[in-house]
Image 1 (cartoon, helix red, strand yellow):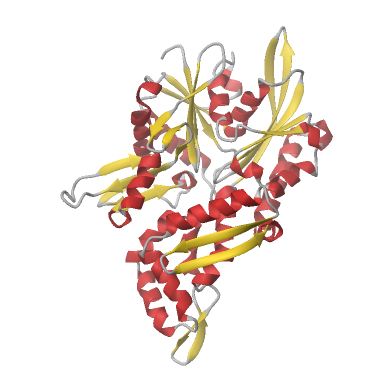
Image 2: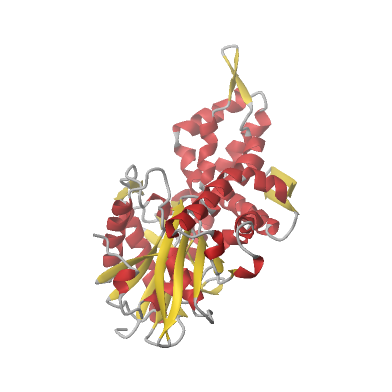
Length: 433
């Protein structure tokens, strides 16, 4: 493996690995998953304590973790989107089946499972690995240095001797540059699950060799996961009692909104069943002005419908990328929520996130000291780049023939591995310190 470079795109939703040698295209690492071969490996892990041996720990990742959780949610701790906590000082550790896990423990556990599942496809770990990182980490007041220190510990446990970090949209830019026929200034927009990141790079040929110069960048800690939560908050939570009232000591009071904050991440819903809030919610069924709605909330939590709800939301979002109106359908147990959703309504729900994304695009242009007319090509990647309202941000600034999309899941990892061919990696990468 010494002649290869490994690029790792550790994403909020998916993780992708790519290998490249000194010449030729990058090669994605494939996984022989239960549902078929895949390269986009879900960024999730599960911890299961078998009934016959409660002290044991069965750990799975990716699609295997999802299967384990769906099969036995009561005895399985499932964690996804944990990248969102990388830069959060408030997240110190979590208890999982009686053991403490810091962020770097979660990440290294996940990475070691990824290495195991890849097996011969990976063939070993090169001494140097280039890891993608967001321009702006997710969360309020993110601590970038803390995130990179945690990454460093986890990736070294994977067996890597030298870890270099590159901005995720820069990785995508290197992938896109292969298609350039002439010199160009390129704006790359990368839309992940937790962050939306933008980089502007000038690509020029000198002596038959493509050279790249970074010009500007910007990012914001909102993306596809925030869109999902807006759908749930506006479409599902009201059917489960959000915005309703209950009676207490002769007063009519609003049902606390905090009961619905866990819906921002479906895997966290299972944790509410043993919480103080759950005891209060059960009591509300007797006191609620609309008890049927609170009863639906109890059933959703008791029966662990979070994953089904997530799938229903994903299907709606995907359909609205191609249709003006789409049906939302969530059916589980006695719960049935079916509603036609116009794209315009969805766009109204995500308007705050769209405004933040739009502002980040403008900051990238300002950082590069360029007007919109100074951009020759725009490359959009990541699942949320397919949302029409997101694409409209770019169509308002750039001519349609300058905008391209594609390789939504592979571009970053492939670009990171190709980046290793650069003579001066220090221009593109950093170390944790």
